[in-house]
Length: 627
Ligand code: ZN
Ligand code: ZN
Image 1 (spheres, rainbow, N blue to C red):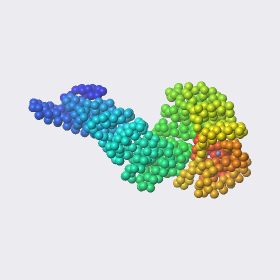
Image 2 (image 1 turned 90 degrees about the vertical axis):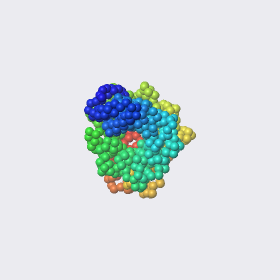
Image 3 (image 1 turned 135 degrees about the horizontal axis):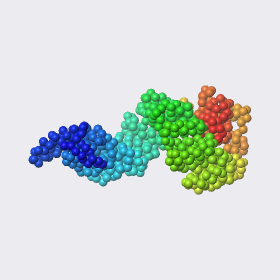
């Protein structure tokens, strides 16, 4: 009993070694059984063959080719696929082997009345495959059938929906689970938490999570909800939940710590991130590419590029394009443009194909180093050598490149000639360049474009007002401010974050809410006094109003980064590095002041602002006053 049989997508030879041998054994024994002519005997033989095929599927289908051989054998022995048992086992074996889903689907479509287990298996197969969309179609078909979904159906279909990132469908399935009374099962709740987290609904994820009755040994749910917050750029909540998890006695694992590292990177919480690093080393996960990339990003975002490099070097051959790209971008935003470009050249030498994000890093490096020609060279090579079509982000980098270099007119012409429609970010970049280089004629054009594209963005009013103020056009600056008030646009409040001990402290402009306020303000006065001895003159043009000079000076003293620095100065030993994360771009006055503070108080100060990193040391800044 050997030969060729057509099995989904190709001819299968059975009768060789392995499964073929087994098939032959069964077929010879069944031949003798079939010699009986009675119908009952034939039926018994058919049942026997079916059992044998199932036994083969359970014990011998260790690869897809072997499975095909067993399938071929069953076809030769007239085992009908419509038999729910045969189909069920065949699909289960295929899905367990991550076999081709079209094959599984062909089998599924031939089964007469598949049971709920088989429906679940095919949905699971799609959910775990690279193309999860059909899982949702199969689920809809199931809803139209006479069967009801069971405990397994919901987790599988929700997994597929999370992968597809279609929140609306997820909410519908959530409703059905509620109607079926299955929403409170742990498996379903875990899947819902994961779904909402993946779709950017961290609060909905938390709501489901909070209602879970037995979350204390459920690390999967903790990880999903923590990851949801981390991925959705909600670092405060991520940290809060991580602490809560500790208080409820749940031990974190590698997944938890990767989410924690993401939050620490956002907040600049280096000390907490370091503790996560130690934990990862202890459990041997620090070389895991996922964890290592999160560590690399943490150190790069905390301005500690030396540590980032160490993690990168430690990865050796395990470096992925994500690792290369993270370090290129990290070097670029930390002001090590030359090093970023050198790393990029090494990446090319090792034939690691860069991505569009790598090129954002490369162009950013050129922009912040003032390398205009090099920037244009890389921009051309992006398409020519790697087939990457430039996106709006890349055009933004080019406008920034020209604008920062003082080529404001060329930047404007570049925007007019761009093959894609410039968005608000592009015009804002130009307006920023106009503000930096005091070019109000082009600045006003950019402002007009922004008025139609994004009329209520307070940063634009601030940029324009600063532009007028830098030209001492007080009445124009004043009318911008009046317009801003009239149109109800509020300035985004500046704040600075600083990590001390186990906490991240936040300071707003003119903040007086901290328990140490008195000592902080005494230190601010001391700072101003010592800076004046060094010849510091406040840059009052950075104050958004035509208020009295004296008031402007005090407004500058209370910028949040200065308050944060005063706070660290009174709470740490001499020589300790100061690291600040500021949400907005640091103003020119604070920049001058922090340079002097680094010299007078002999502290290295790293500021990550809304635009880039500044490493202040001994009276100078790594940005070379170009930011
Ligand atoms: Zn400032
Ligand atoms: Zn700087």
